[in-house]
Image (cartoon, rainbow, N blue to C red; front, side, top):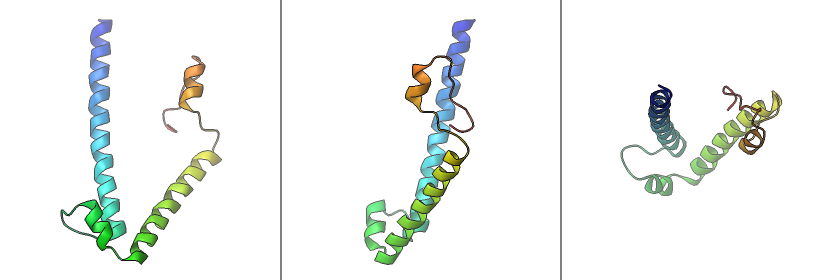
Length: 99
């Protein structure tokens, strides 16, 4: 029973990780298209090379600001528990929501 549960949880974890990775890939493509202003199925490098310089600077600056503000907000509500710290202390758990 315990092995069946472990296999089920491993399969479920793999499926959730796969779906999450796919969704993050789609989000990344959306951000790339919006930030660099290219449409269609052309390669990322081609889209960036054809984007005007102001758009490359504005896009990367805007994304940097969003990520920086997100990191600041995360840090302002308490310490961030690192994976090494959580593994070093078996009694310590990673907070699911913040992680």
